Length: 471
Image (cartoon, helix red, strand yellow):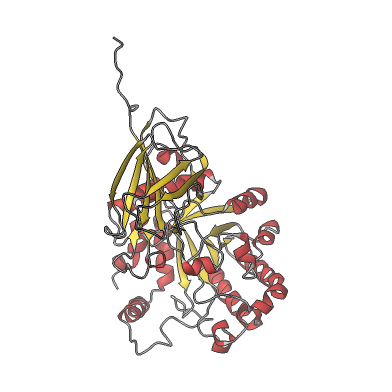
């Protein structure tokens, strides 16, 4: 492995707004550096049957054969480029431990003191042997079926134990012999989801156990401008804990696309979508932003995203595309559901279905800078003769310009209904879109599905409209 290739991940984000580089040092099947306390990645896989795992192991080994520690190489490069370096440690699984301890094998997960001690040993090694600027306790990168860390019957009694373990980890990181480092955690987006896994995040923040927290759900990688993180930003402000909003990388991925539409898989979010989500997060009170899995190798769009999102003033008057979150089956089972797709089972005039969404833009205050606002609604199993009632914050856009087009999911099954909003516009803050199916043409029964809702806010240097001299 050439040094230029080893540095590439760091170098790609240099000279953007990125000031911190986070690196996953262990994903549950071995550590990505020559650890003295844990199993090295790949040691249980040889001979390899996957080109990806073989390549990862070989790349690390080629550095180590030259006397280089792969983790030190990354840390030093990040510091050379003016970035802090955080070591991210996933906690659901672990390499080198007894398989019987794992929940998937009938074990008790972090209820086993051996598992908790093993994770602390890795954290101690990172703090003592490497010049990391921070350690992330990654509770969000959990795979397989819930529960992730404790058996259901252990959650109540072991939630305080997990809190005590977080306190031990914080002490190790903050009191290491060299310069003190920060400690934080990736947690689930809602308080209920965390408590259901034995994670008492509220207590962690009240007791000052963390310096930062990142609400995220690893299994849901669709960009979510409406992530319900206000409970965390309020707690963070009260207890001087930084909260970073996670900008997921995809507009849609396989977890949110119906199985019969396999031709639609991962679609990366655009810069306009990232601006909208970033603006919403800033409006919700985050202290910074976080992202991952951008389209790679990086192009102009990715560098633009990483440059723009770091400054709320930079994106304030830049065009944005708000996309309402779409449901994932796995995420919904864990308590992280969504309003879309919205099934309307039959025509029923007056029965409105609500879809809330947040808009950070000051629509009224910056009306002279907004060139155009478009509301787009994608509906499947629809025909042009279907009649709807649509309202935005209680007002009908029926008199606005309305355009129709083939849908994105399937041209034969869905349509885009697009409004150019002039008289009826969204508000800064929470908005409510109500949709009802009033009637269907003769001979057509059943219902429709609202698949997508998007709001475009486009800015321009001059106000829309034409100054006309009076006659």
